[in-house]
Image (cartoon, rainbow, N blue to C red; front, side, top):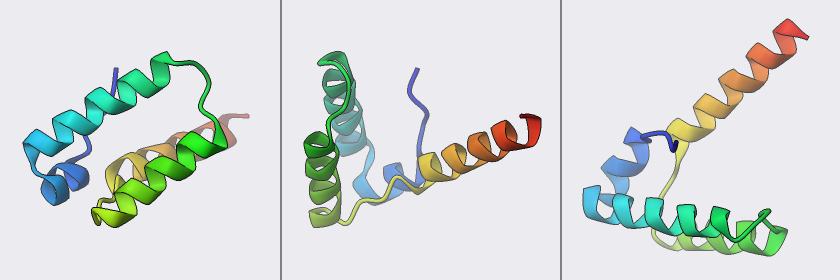
Length: 70
C-alpha cells in the first residue's frame, strides 16, 4: 500500500495527489524503476513545486530503524 503524504496533499491538492498516486502505481507495475523514470518524476515534481517530504521522512526513519537493528 502507498503511504498518505500530507505534505504532498497540501502542495498538490487532493485531486492532483490522487492522480499522482495513480501514476506512481502504474509506474511501479511496469517493473523495476529506472533512473530515467526517477529523473522524469523528479522533473515533474520540481516543475509543479511538489515535494513528497512526508514519504522522505518515512524512508529516513525506516533506514534508521534498519540500521539500529542490524
